[in-house]
Image 1 (cartoon, one colour):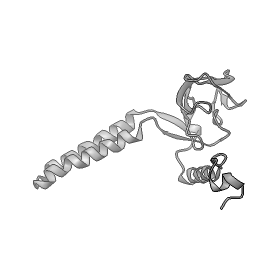
Image 2 (cartoon, one colour):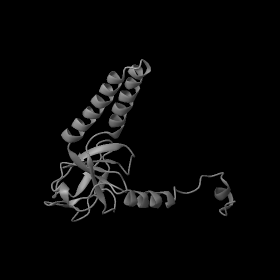
Image 3 (cartoon, one colour):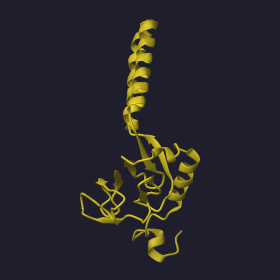
Image 4 (cartoon, one colour):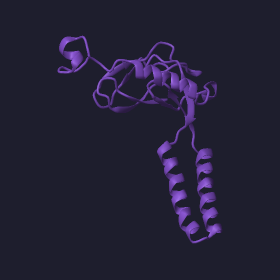
Length: 167
């Protein structure tokens, strides 16, 4: 199994191998270590995120979303040329070919787990079927919690930083 996550020490994305006997994750860039919570990794699969305290993971395709969107946009743009020249067969041939490529990629690509809270990505984990697909409600709850977290101490020179009382 491996996890791709943003290192809490240096902030850079790193990918680390781990198994159920591993006790910590080590960043490849800065060497910073992150302890793996007890019971997070079992032979039956992942029970929670090993990077953050979240227990909510979702199942998704292991394919970069920006590549899929690019395929669709290129297909749409390419279909505009025959559309302009009133070549309906060419237009729909391009659109259907683009859709076919998208469906084939969807069927061929494997699955992975992703954490709602820290967006850590888990590949090679067993029993992916025990996790559910993406839930917009759960995602929105985590997004709202992240928005309410303080961003750190106010910078010197700001209204809140000068007298500690704010505006």
